[in-house]
Structure formats: structure tokens, C-alpha cells
Length: 158
View 1 (cartoon, rainbow, N blue to C red):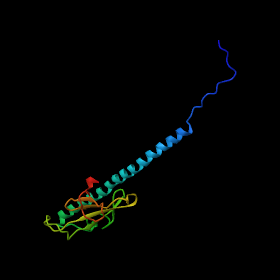
View 2: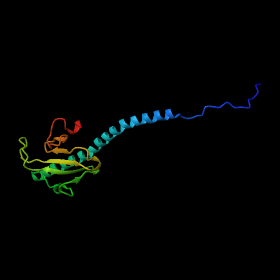
View 3: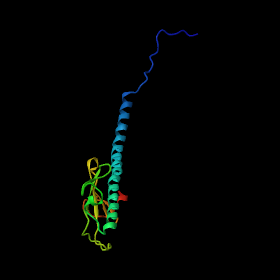
View 4: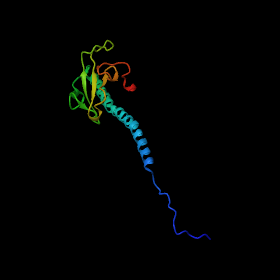
């Protein structure tokens, strides 16, 4: 039987070295640099649905109004909203108005009247672009701020 030594061998402490901790911090920092912009872009795109929902609801109400009155209206109170402009979206990320309700040039539209609905981003969404919806079903996010529909600005491609 071996005799027990009166001196214990020093054991290696259980833990992390400073280098290991620094490498972990660097890796987490790099992941954060990649993840935060992607997450922010995802949230902006998800919140865009709030404005799209408002514009689609306004369009449906405009169509019902047209069915009853043979004309569209720029007065949003006439189609059930509490104000004629700057109507809040359900989650408050957009305010919408009827930009034009009459006088549109529309050769394919026998009534000669139309509407253009515009949703302007608000608050946390203010870095996004304006959304538009027309009587003919054109839906776009105005990337170049010209208030005109251009190829590549469709809601589905954003």
C-alpha cells in the first residue's frame, strides 16, 4: 500500500482563461453585427403588412361606396373612417389618405374617376417608403420617392 504524500499535487483550476473569454466575446460580437441588421430589416418588412392591410381595407370600402354612388370619394369619413386623411393603421405604423379620387387619367376605366391611396410610415417604421394602392389594383412601395409606379416596386417584390 503506497504511503500518502503529505503534500498534495496542485490541481489545475476549473474555469476559462482570459483568451478563451476574449475569443467568445469576439465571436458573439461578429454574430451580433450580422444578426441585428437582418432582424431590423425583417421587422420593417413585417410591419409593412400593417400599412398594406389599411390600404386594402380602404380600397374595399371605396369599391362599396362606388357601387352605391357610382363614384369614388376622397372624403374617407364617407366610407366609415373617423377622419378624411391621416387615418391610422391598426398597429399605428402608417397613416393613410386618399391622394386623388377624381380627375385621374384612366383610359381603361369607363367612369373616368379613380382613387389613389397612400400610406405614410410613422414612428419606428418611418425609415420605410410610402405605400400606394390605386383603383386599378396597382400596389407599390415608392422606393425612389417619385409617387409613380415603377417596375420592381410591387408589394410582392419588396
